[in-house]
Amino acid sequence: MPPSILPKEKNLKKSFDLLYRNYTKPEFLDSDPLFLCYLYDSPEDREFVGLLSALFAYGNVTAIRGFLSRLLEPMGKRPKQYLLNHGTKIWKNKLGPYRFQKEKDILLFLQAIRLAYLEIEKSGEKFLESWFSPINPRDKGLEKRIAGFQSRLSEILNHLDPGWKSYGLGFLIGLGNPKSAHKRYCMFLRWMVRKEEPDLGLYKNIQTSELLFPLDTHINRLSNILGITERKTSDLKKSREVTDYFQKFYPEDPLRMDFALCRLGILRKCKSVYIAELCESCDLKEVCKIYGKKKKKVGTATEN
Image (cartoon, rainbow, N blue to C red; front, side, top):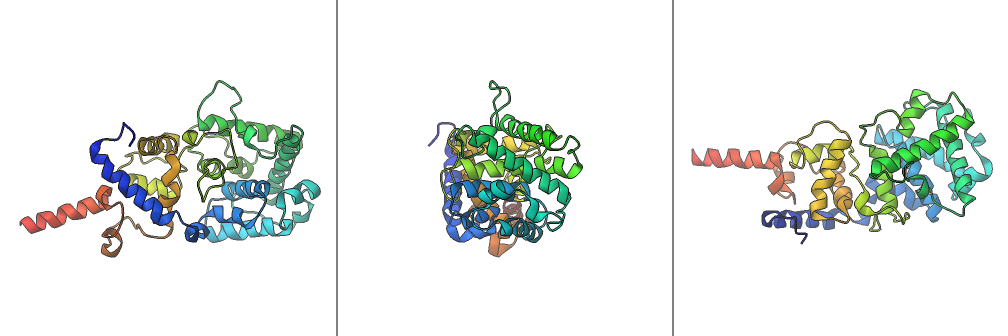
């Protein structure tokens, strides 16, 4: 038990561990965008598909899956090699837009990723991990690693098209907001860095202790319901607060609970209101504000 955990938190850690065991199972993988990576055998393809799945993971789940299917199917079983060998001509005037991105934005992005892979191949690298290093080697923090990737990709885009900075492509790469929680990058890096399934553990130099919680809609909501943070704004500061909270329980692996907690939202096991059949059997009911209020009301009514 880490020394920073108070005695009263020991039972809470047991609850977290129980939730982890109940939901970190292969049968729940298809409810997560990470499942697309498992459709490919090659670790290099899994990284490439993971990057696409993460950066386009905004909006309606059905729309996301439909778009990624249109994007990935023409590349066959070896999508990274297909992109390197053939470029983007297969999609021209066929792929169409996705949400904020016009087709031109998406094809420019793919061309930039292609050049990024060709660049790292010159030094014998297979993965983009080195691109997730701070521009200034003395800088610390995952957000500095993410900024490094964004900066390097921006340089390639400047080379491809000096007028590339449309709203859609800027949004896809995640430029322009220094307070951003970088949800999509944090999710991608969790997949690439953590060694335990369902994550892939492809990156070797970034430590699990460096990771930050991806503030998707479920973690954003549950972190407030569970009293992990009082902060309402979904920003970098909130991501750090959630990460710091779990670092007390799992010092070397603060994102251990991310997949399991997300299942509560994705599988609609938590609906932000008291529902007896869900709440009474929830592993986290003792720390839940909604359950606590209901329990208090029942106790008051009994006393009266």
